[in-house]
View 1 (tube, helix red, strand yellow):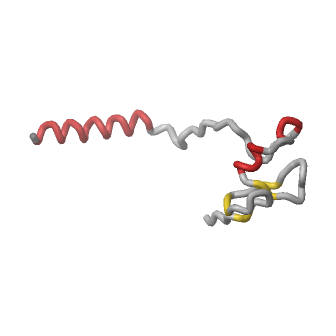
View 2: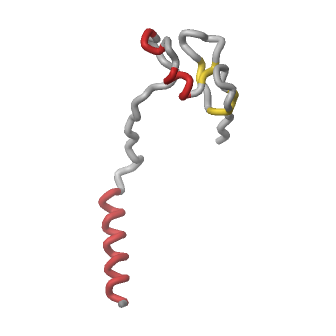
View 3: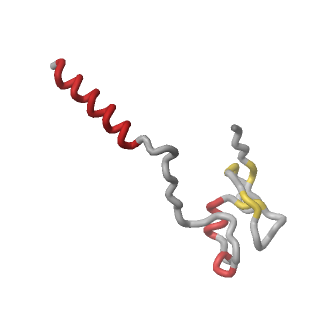
Amino acid sequence: MSIYWEKCSTCWRHHPVRQCWLHPEDMVCVYCCLACPERRGCPRPAWLRELKPVEAAGGGGAEAKKVLESLLERLGGEG
């Protein structure tokens, strides 16, 4: 998978950009979107301020814990 970094229409830095909702001709980076003076009235900002938690795929937490405990026991028994 390739990530292409384009120029922001506002600051001209190379960052990941998205299309501005209020100005569709502009592609804005996260920094310019968050600093935009019109952001308060924007119905759908290109970039959001909050982080959304991502859950790990699979439920191998208990199995991984058992493997780690067995490895720690082996290391402890050798010394």
